[in-house]
Image (cartoon, rainbow, N blue to C red):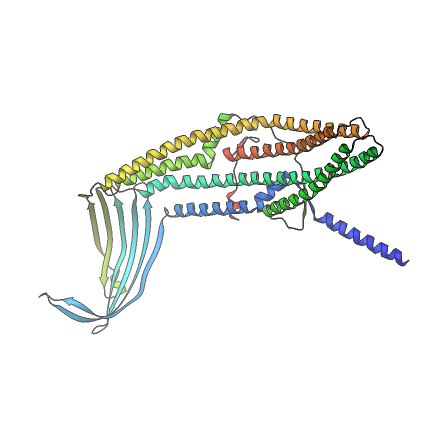
Length: 494
C-alpha cells in the first residue's frame, strides 16, 4: 500500500512537469515571427523613435509659418543710480536717478514665405514713475502698430524651406517603411537560422540512431566473417562522428535560440518550435513598374530630389549673399502719452516710419565670387553623383526583380532534390540492411546528400523570403495586392 502511494505521487509529479513543459512550449510560424519583430524588436522600436523625431521636426517647421502671438513685459524695472548728464556747454554733470519702469507689449507676427518678409501687429503700454523730487507718473501707449519688414535682394530661406522640409518629411516616412521591411528581412534570417539549427540537431540525432543500428548489424556480420574489418571501422567512425555532431548541434542551437529570443524579446523560459513555411507567393513583376514605384515611394528616390534642391538652395545663397542688398521697413500706428492711463488712450496721435536700408559691398577681394564658384562646383558634383546613383539604383531593382522571378524554379529544384536525396538514402540504407549494398562509402554519400539537400531546401526558402521583402523595401510597393505600402501615423505616435 505504501509503495502504491509513492508510485502515485511520482506519477503526479511527472504529469505536472510534463504539462508545465507543454505550457512553456511555443510554436511560431514565419508570419508570427515577422509580426512579433515588427511589434517589439529593438530594431522596430528604434525605427519608430527615429520617425517620431522627424515627425515633430516637421511639425515645428510648419508651426514656424503660422501666426505667432507673443506677450513681452518688464514688471518692474527699478533704477536708483547716478547718471551722467551732458550740459549745453559740453561739460558733464551727474544727477541722481530714482525711477521705476514697467512695460507690456503684445505682438502678432506672420512670416510671408513667398517674399521672405514678415508682417506684424503690435500694441504696447509703458509706465514711468520718477521719484526724484516727488512722484511723477507718466504713461506711453501704442494702441496699435502695423508694420512690414521685407528684404529686397536677400536669400529667401523661407522659400527654399517650403520646398525642402516637406520632402525631408516624406523621406522620413519612406525611411520608416523601409526600416519596417528591413525588420521583416532580419526576422526572416533569424527564423531560418533557428530552423536550420533545429534541422541540424534532428539530422544529428537521426544519423546517430541510424549509424548505431548499422554498426551493430555490421558487428554481427563481421563476427560471421561476411564483411571486412575496414567496413566495420568506417561505420564505427561514422557513429562516433554522429555522436559528436549532436553535441555541436546542441551548442549551436542554444546560441542561436539566445540570439533569436533576444531579437524578439521573448522570455528565456519559453521553448520555441518553428513551423516551416509551406506556401510561397509567386507573381510577375514588370521591371519598369518596379522602377517607377521606387522613384516615387522610396527614401532613396526622394533623397535624390532633396539633394538637388539643397544644392540649388546653396547656390542661390552664394549668389545673393555678400552682394548688393536692401531692406524695406514700414510701420504705421497710433501713440499717445499722458499722466494718467485713461488720458493715454484718448485722441491718440498717428506715427509713421519708413526705412530703406542699403548694403553695398565695395571691395571683398573676390570673397563673394569664390563662394559662388565653390557652390557651383558643389552643385555640379551633386548633379553628377545623383545621376550615377540613379543608374545604380535602377540596376539594383532590375536585378532583384529578375532574381525574384527565378525563385519559383529554384524552390521547385530544391524541393525535388530534397525528395530525391531522401528517397535515395532510404533505399541505400534498406539495401545495406538486407545485404545488397556492401560498399559503406555509397551509404555515406547517400547520407551526406540527404542531409545537404534538406538544408539546401530551407536555405532556398530563406533566399525566397529575403528576396520578397527586399523587393518590398526597394519599391515600397505591395505587388501581391497591387498597392502602395502605407502605415497609420497615429499608431506610431501611441
